[in-house]
Image (cartoon, rainbow, N blue to C red):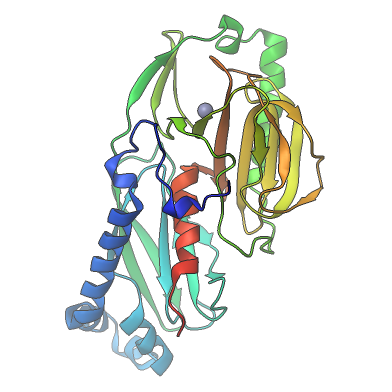
Length: 332
Ligand SMILES: [Zn+2]
């Protein structure tokens, strides 16, 4: 029943965009990493570019860090998450992207080895964005080459009130949006999970993340999660350990459960026919959350599974595959 997402191919579903295949992502990351490690140019360029006084400050640990630090450029599709890992990084280092500090997190099985997860919002314009790795005595830049990806587009017809809500309904959706964003923007410092993430149900995908959507011929949007085929009443389980951050009915998402996994990562389970957990409840990976349904803005019954990282909506399966790859690091 519980399949690990990183070994997972969605049977019977539309194929995911080619850039989503985990194998190719890993191969590319690996190729870039080995290039950086082998190339002395990267380091000499960096050292040349620094003022003499700053060069003096290049401690042995910083030099070691440069030798093992990530490649100077990475490709990432808008709406996806870049994983950058550091075999060594000096204490008091920080990583900054789009003027925000991205938390340095510890590998699950190697507490002294660090990584960052960098969410790239779906509406980001393709092009180069700089990620800054700041450490005592210097700074290294990594270029994130943001690509458009191969997202599809579709037209969808729903009840008119779900596209043009009346003033009362609109007020409700605005309050629900504010409530959700307040949750997503709060980062619980601790990590609740200790094992790889799993799928919220064992079922084919009917609509992947990122499809451009036109609702009722007027409203332009994009698919903010992954849809699983689910007859009403199918069991929905938690993708990993966490705490229930929200469990209620909402206008667009219908009966919704949001799980806080800690460190700014949340997973969401929408359109349920029944919610069987309460806000504040601690839950375990694979634990029953409720039953699937067709509540909220839907064309039919299914499970909408979504993920938020530091307040940014990202492709949930790609994020999970990145997190799960942390468990595949060989032991030292
Ligand atoms: Zn959906």
